[in-house]
Amino acid sequence: MIEARLQLQRADFTLDVNLQLPGRGITALFGPSGCGKTTCLRAMAGLERAQGRVVVNGQVWQDDATRQWRPTHQRALGYVFQEASLFAHLSARGNLQYGLQRTPAARRKVQLEQAVELLGIGHLLERSPASLSGGERQRIAIARALATSPQLLLMDEPLSALDAQRKAEVLPYLERLQRSLDIPVLYVSHAQDEVARLAHHVVLLQAGRAVLTGDTASAMAQTAYPMGPAADAASLVQGQITAYDAQDHLSTVAFDGGELFISGAAQRQPGQTVRLRVLARDVSIALQAPAGSSILNRVPATIAALHADSPGHAMLSLQAGSTTLLARVSARSVRELGLQQGQMVIAQIKSVALLD
Image 1 (cartoon, helix red, strand yellow):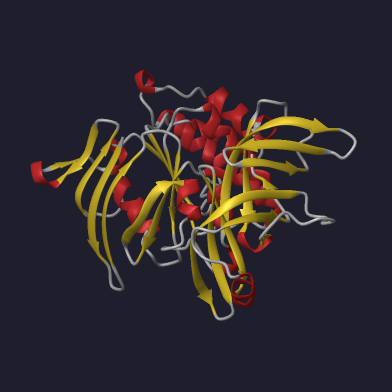
Image 2 (cartoon, rainbow, N blue to C red; image 1 turned 60 degrees about the vertical axis):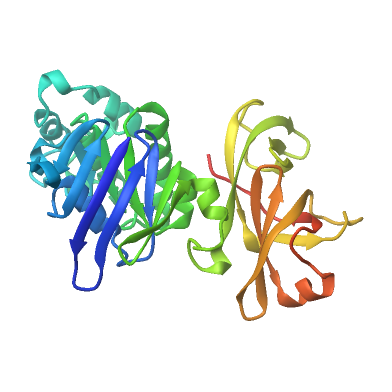
């Protein structure tokens, strides 16, 4: 368990959070620029002197009530910044050795070879930072943080400085980390696609305060505090591959609420769990299953909530079993179909993105 009760006055906002976070997996600190995500992360690291209490899996890093304070260098943490911030005069291997030397031998739980293998950087070790791409530099920086065998890994928008190609290069390695290492991660981001793909738990910050905490699927599906513009709203579906059709190159994913057909999962085996992202704008509504439609994914659902999200549009929260789906439709469609809370409908899903 990670506990963070922090208060810190800023010129444009006051950080005031009281967080109880899981002691494992990836927790995303999410929200718009300037909402306090990085300030919160830096305060937990001791880089900013906030008032309050920080406890990581039973170890007290700060407790102002009892005058306890560990400076940053005494906190068993790894920190990955937006920029890789490698030592230019050292090779990639030298940067990793620096991280290793920071850690007493008795506390070393992550072997250097393990970090190198997880990040796929063995072929880069003798190169200088100047000769590496942005994605390669960031993978070295992550491995250096892991080499300290941290009890908590803090990542401050580690992909924001990368272009789309380099970001796509690094994301699979971050997924591998969360599956392979039992190290809790606090991951700062304002990119909903990163959060959907990586995070198990979400804290939504607005003006220095946590307005929402919960598992990622629940956080993405709620509408009271949307995680971004309505046009980008999405829901997360967690399911299991049950079959693969080689002729049509489609996999069947069963979830609590129905089945979905997806492409791009030919290498996944039946029984494997997957996460799917469904954009609200890719979900349309029918009152009954239509005949002669090209849309393969049709899920019976109940309208749990309905509200206007912008002029001419409405957001529907649909319940299919224990799974919540979002649908963004026109206000005219709501009126002409007579849609209302509690109504049974068919959710037609035009596109599904496989996340992991």
